[in-house]
Image 1 (cartoon, rainbow, N blue to C red):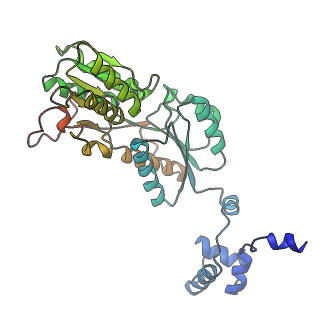
Image 2: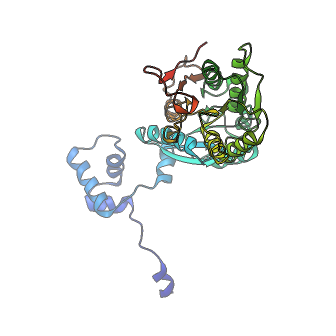
Image 3: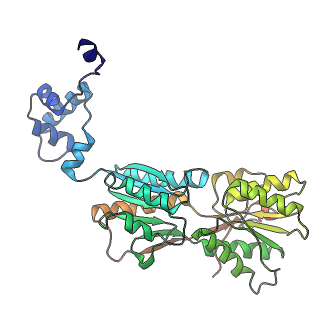
Length: 354
């Protein structure tokens, strides 16, 4: 029996211990720590000093039972790998910290069934959910979550606009990038598309095709990709080995452009002298490549920040009734060395022609 007792850790400090040390009631300790109700400043300081000395930490689960809040939000993403998702998480986390909220992050690995499973696992542990669903719609979220849970979508959509959504102007950005290449004099422009069935990939492909239509450029040349560096590398290998090589490549994201750049370089093909190369997203790495990558700037950190702020407003009941169901974030073409000659003064970026 003594051996069993010896294995036990130290007894957790309770709110009763803090009350005893501070010589006040348990109710006074609760009001002082949670900043609720009237507590004289000198009493509050005495309680806080006692809590610090005892290293007391309020029990989150018990506090949640009282308040009905977990002070935690969920973030569901299709993947956690790469600079794009790192930047998105950074933006969400930065906004959450300002609101005093904690963040639970989960990945669906691009699977709708895994996404639904993750959503169910988060249910009851979060006050609200941010979700990026890669497919054409996010209807399954409605089946997996109670209707009362505040939810905001990222670069996703659900039928009927059940949830507020923040999306990047993928179509406009892709169209502007393709037009930029056409205006530079390129006529055979290939596109490394994103994953099949992915909403952003489809919109970027649509923008590319729209820019080519009636432009005098050659017909679309579409190469399969899946947004990963590896798929961009394979696409670059195929381009280097194929006949009728294009004179410009527009990758649907920067990570595929990075992979393509490596493959072209290994084949002895120079960028931009032999072939121009552009991407989409403007991840931090893009400006440090050699040559620096021309890309569509989509501030994903701001996307995450604004979505979290909308979610927090929904949780607190602060959201304006007339707020748009979908907010589209504008993008711009950032011209760097990979698409041709260095940009002239005042040509660091190009707006989106409509």
